[in-house]
Image (cartoon, rainbow, N blue to C red):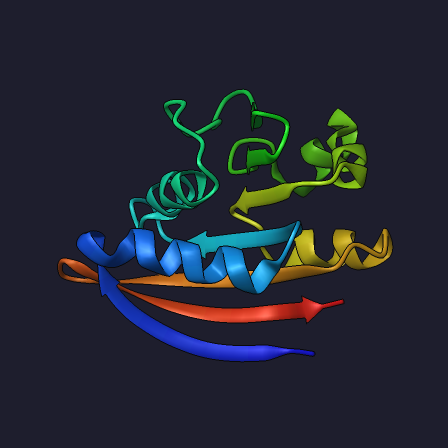
Length: 143
């Protein structure tokens, strides 16, 4: 069942929002995080990791494409490699692993790739609003 809604929150309320998304995803899921540079994609991943009880320092995998945390959080950044580079890396196979796959910069082309492989996903589009962010959430965008 698809669910679409918006939520505006500041950094002080990001942890609660990340917990909300964790509950909605269930035991695992693929989540595309989209927004301009410095919109808060990695900040959301940090809050999501906290919701999972991960205490390890979270950083953006801009040049390595993937950081994996405790075998349950897979944090991808495809800004540098794009969809083609991601596909050539073979990392699409990681989506077979149980856990949460959070992908920064998952654009329409990346969505086509997920469709092609039959991978269900949800999306969050992040817009900056001074010190707050508007999160446009689409759970089960493609299931």
